[in-house]
Length: 211
Image (cartoon, rainbow, N blue to C red; front, side):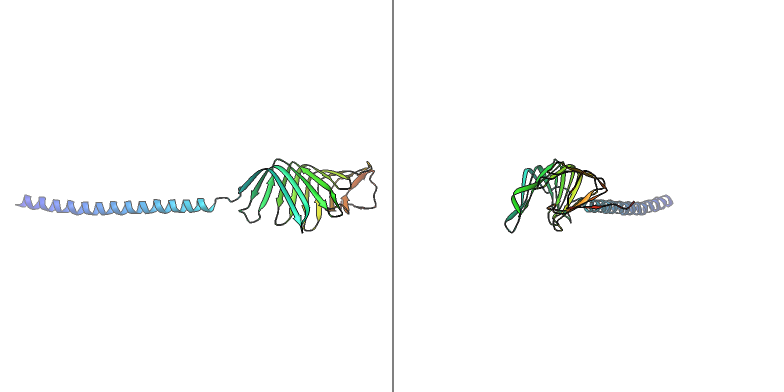
């Protein structure tokens, strides 16, 4: 009888311990699942939150751009490929494989000026342009400018660069602006910095940069 009592007691203890073990395992398993799911959710949130929107939303091959002001064509641009980034705070257009731009003045609408470059970026809403890589500009009066980069603020009608500028006038005279230039976008006025050469014109305002 005592043996039966001991066996019964041992069986009861084992059942009790098994219940505790099962409960502990179930609890640990549930916690583990919750932790894994929470971690995955946080990782997905971080991944989605870190996705960049700086990718082209539109790509145009053999692009032609025409800009008008009150019906008057102010600009024509051609590029082998144009990429438009429209999903970011400051949308812009990029021409990575070069661009050719013609800009028109109402005073000489049939004789456009020209800009060519290996790379260009256009902020259409700001009307701000930047061109880089063997930049060449020809005005509607025949002046030729060569530099490595140029910036054009069309709203302010201002063009400028800090690069060395090489200029050839229509009469063949030349000038080197060692520290860049600033000009009106119709080139009716311009300023060169630390210039040298045989250039001579009443429109040139020489301005030495501080040493």
